[in-house]
Image (tube, rainbow, N blue to C red; front, side, top):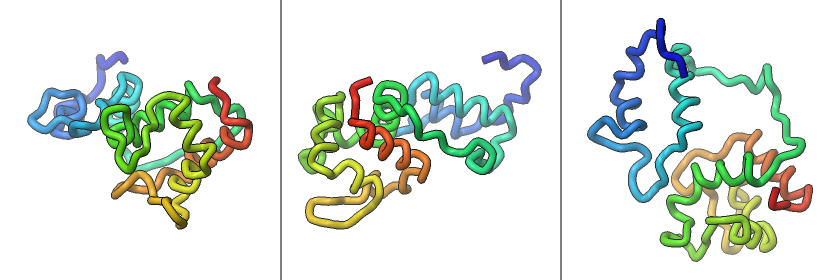
Length: 152
């Protein structure tokens, strides 16, 4: 990202330093996976644009057509789930690392119920102790499941 002629005051902030690993407190904390370069670039762009508290859902809408596992589902799971539900830390006996493990949670009906914060036996609202995923994200997951939960 070209940062010439950009006010980098935000890039010297404690938050940015924690995200990039240049501060005292690395975020997200261990055992959560670090942010991907694409996620860091998005945050950097947001900071450079003034870090406004805005969303584009009223302008952009939510396109939940043609949702693919590799381009959308897997990155969301990596960001919000893998810290607790991986090969090494399968909290509650749930492993979401890789397509096969995610598909198992789709097939047993728990994936959508947990992200929708529904109630029922064996259902715990996820992300645990975090904010509910956006309605758009949930719609995209539901669309992917409705389309057959393909490994695409």
